[in-house]
Length: 166
Image 1: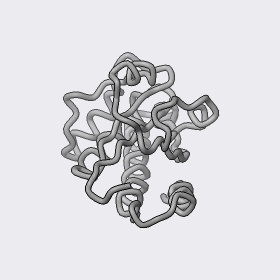
Image 2 (image 1 turned 180 degrees about the vertical axis):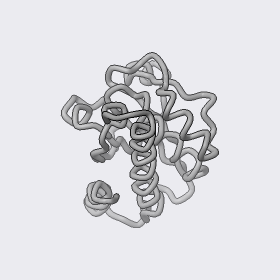
Image 3 (image 1 turned 135 degrees about the horizontal axis):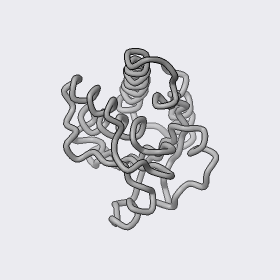
Image 4 (image 1 turned 60 degrees about the vertical axis):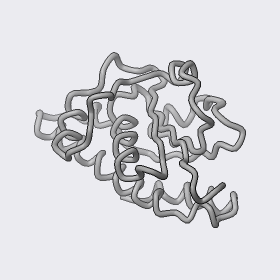
């Protein structure tokens, strides 16, 4: 993998309206120039969750183009070869992964679905903030990996270890 190229990253969750969209948005801003992020849901919701949009806008991230897509819809867009796929839900991890490149590396980051957290509005918004924090921390570790200097096995080990980040 060349030092000057951009890496294409796909985040997959169940509905694609919160976790994967948040991850896509964070990586596209924090990893700009090195990473291009996409997101998909296995059974996508019709629109992004409003709490996710509110949180991202509050954190000064661009949200105008965010919309849940299915993996099939992404494949129809004829994306470039995907270098990394991160599943963010246990359901997504257990499902068959899309064929988006011969050299695609995969890892699972277990992130609780903030949409499923019970409670009042404040408690639910706090769950979205916690999801943001977990993803931001993991993505921070990911973008600082020495991708070009690690062999494939070492890189896979590092990708898997990221799930332990809080």
